Amino acid sequence: MLKTLDPKELQSRKSAAEEQFRGRKAGINHFAGVDPVTGRPVGGHQDGGIEAVLVKYAEDLIPVYVEFTAKGYTLTTIGTVALNANTFEVYFNRPESQIKPMLAAILQKVEDDYTAEIEIHNEKFIESEVQAQINIEARRQERELAEAAAKRRAEIEAEIRATFQPPQETTAPVQAPAPAKGKRS
Image 1 (tube, one colour):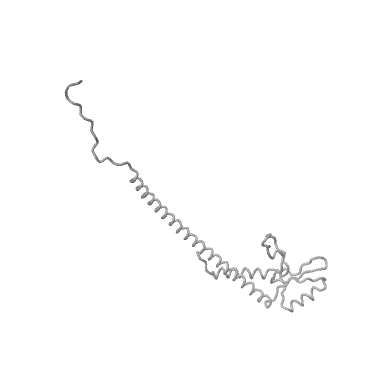
Image 2 (cartoon, rainbow, N blue to C red):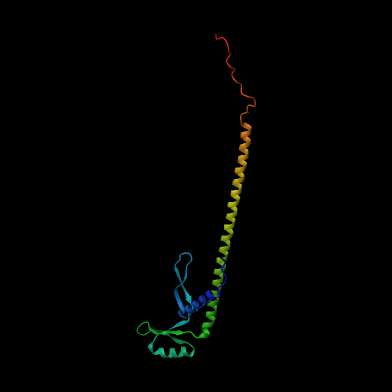
C-alpha cells in the first residue's frame, strides 16, 4: 500500500529526536557516523543540549558556575564530576536561546528523513506493482502463444495425415468364387 505522511508518527519521531538532543552531551562522539566502505565507526562532533565545561582547579568551580548561570545555563542532574584529584567537569543545560535554532535544524532533518522514507517506500511499492502486472501480462501472452501454437500444430498434423494417408478403396472387395457344384476331379 502507498503510505502517506502520518502526523502522529512524525510528531513521535520529532519528540524522540528532541528528547535525545536535550539529553546528549555536545562534543566529540567517537561513534558519530559509520564508514560506508568498512562499516567501522567514525568519530565526529555532535550537538547536544548538555554542555560539559572542563574546570582544571577546584577553586575555579564556583566562578565557572556563576559565569555560566549568568549566561542562562542551568546545572544538570549530573552536576559536577571529578575527573581526577584536581580536574572537574561541570554539566550544564544549554539556554533555550541556543537550543531553539539547533533543535529546529534537527527537527527539519527528522521531517525530511521521514518524507524521504515514505517516498522511497511508495516508489518501491509502485515498482513492485508494475513488475507484477508485467509478469501477469507476460504469462498471459505466453499462454496465448502456447494455445495458438498447439492449435496450429493440430492443423498441420491434420493436413499431413490427410496428404500421406493411404487411399481408401471405394469398390467392394473381391470375393473368392464359390466352389463349383458338380464333379470332382
